[in-house]
Amino acid sequence: MYIDNQLLANMVDEARPISSEGRLVDYIPALKKENKDNLAVSVCFLNGEFFYAGDYLEKFTLQSISKVITLALVLMDNGEEEVFSKVGMEPTGDPFNSIVKLETNRVSKPLNPMINAGALAVTDMIKGATNEEKWERLLAFVNVLTGEEEVTYNKEVADSEFNTAFLNRSLGYFMKQHGIIKGDVEHLIYLYTKQCALEMNCQDLAKIGAVFANDGMDPVTGRQLITRDVARICKTFMVTCGMYNSSGEFAIKVGIPAKSGVSGGIMGSVPRKCGIGIFGPSLDETGNSIAGLRLLELMGNEYKWSIF
Image (cartoon, rainbow, N blue to C red; front, side, top):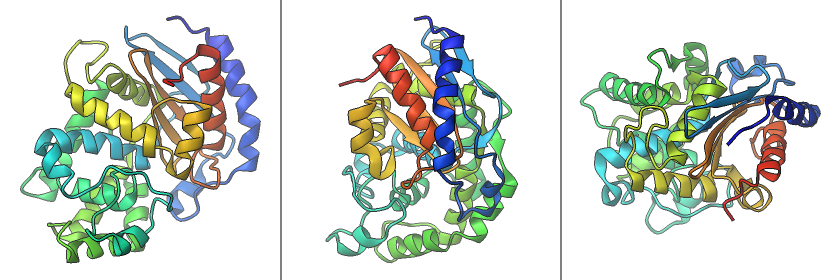
C-alpha cells in the first residue's frame, strides 16, 4: 500500500493544534522537559517500506509501550500457563497505577499485563540469574525487533523514575506479600524503570508495530521473531487494555490495536497491513497522547484501518 507523505504531513498539521489542550506528564521529572507541541509519525508496511511526517527520528522513551514487548518475551520464555497464573486477562476501569483491584480480588493478582501491577509481575518473570542478565536479554530482544543494535535506555529518565517510584514499590511489595512477585522488589523496580526508559524513534517503533502486525514475522528479513500465537495475544491486549481507561472509546473511534505510554508515544499494529509509531508528548486526562489519538483517528478513517 502507498501513503502520500504530503497527506500524512497534512494530517499531522491538522492534529497538532490539539496539543495545547493537553499537559506533559508531571510525576516523572525528566519528562517535563519535552516540547508540548511535538508531533511525529512513521508507518512501516509489511514490505519494509516506511512513510513518515514530522520529526520522526527524534528519540523518546517507551514507558508503558514497553509492556507489550516484555510480555511477548516473557510469554515465549515461560508459556501462557505460567504467565497467566500470575496476571489476568481482563480490562480494568481503574487507573493504570491503581492498587484497588489487588486488594479486592480473591486471588491477589493483577487484572492484566498493561496496568502497572501486571507489568511488574511480567517483568519479574524475565528469565535470567541476575538483574543484569535479565536486562541484557530484554535489550537484545528489542534490538532484534527494531533491526538495530543501538537501541538502549535513557539513564536520566530511568533514574528519575526509580527515585519517584513509590506507588510502583507499593504494588511490588503488595504482590510480594501474596506470592505474585518472587524476586527482590528493589531489583525489580530498578529493572522496570530501565525497561520503561527504553529509548527509540517513531521509525523504530513503527518497525516493532509491523512485527506484531505481521503475526510476529520481521517484515524486512522474513524471520519469525515472535511466535504467531504470542503476537495474537499481545495484539488482543492492545485492543482491550492498550489505551488505559480510554481503550473502549479508542476501539470504537479508531479500532487499531495500539499501546500508549506517558512519554507521548503510541505504537499501532494494523493486522497484516502495517505498524505505526507516533510521538506527541502532550497528554489527555487518561495519559494518552492527545494529538497522537487525533492523528490515529484521522489516519484510520482515511485508510480504513479499523479491525472492526
